[in-house]
Image 1 (cartoon, rainbow, N blue to C red):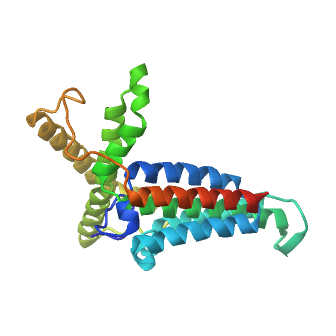
Image 2: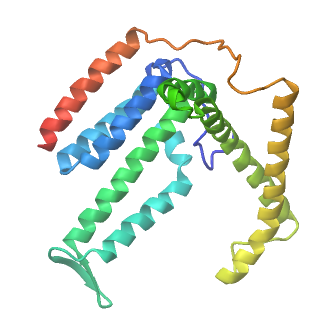
Length: 265
């Protein structure tokens, strides 16, 4: 398994997180997103960190595995922090070098945005690691079902999301294979000027795009050969239903939200 990016991969397991109804998982993530942007002090952020790492512990997925698979995301988080660090100029000056001042507001704002981004990425990754793409599709379709009354293509949207999640690991593996094949032919896109590096990426991107279109065509032909006609006339093998674990999770979530609100105020 390619561990350069684990978003979209599924790790089988029998943990509490694996057994939670996928609809409830999506609702939890939606509520968590709101809570992340409502956090306004150190203790509210501590409670969010506790929630995320408690969820990771309950999933029984090694923390090292999750962090190793998020290497590409770390650069985005660092760049986000540095960007806010230098553009915000409120409060007292903490550090000054080469004529550039780093202010208290910049540090706080950068740390706040980077923390929010980190927490959301971890929880979203945990969703895909503990939930099969089919279950995510069924959950999205079930939650968006009321929109069918206004002729919103719920099934098609859910199917596209499922296919996208399913092909993220495949796409990354294909990119890794092509890059190694091109490196064996003497291609090096890690050295030289920035302009030369972009030019060197063309032999990598063109085969990758061709392979992606070929996979999309094969998938479309396979679905057509199996008589896929959209949602009409389709039945489901697995019916979603809440279990005892789900009700316990709901109660725990309510307790967390009440505690979070009290800490925030």
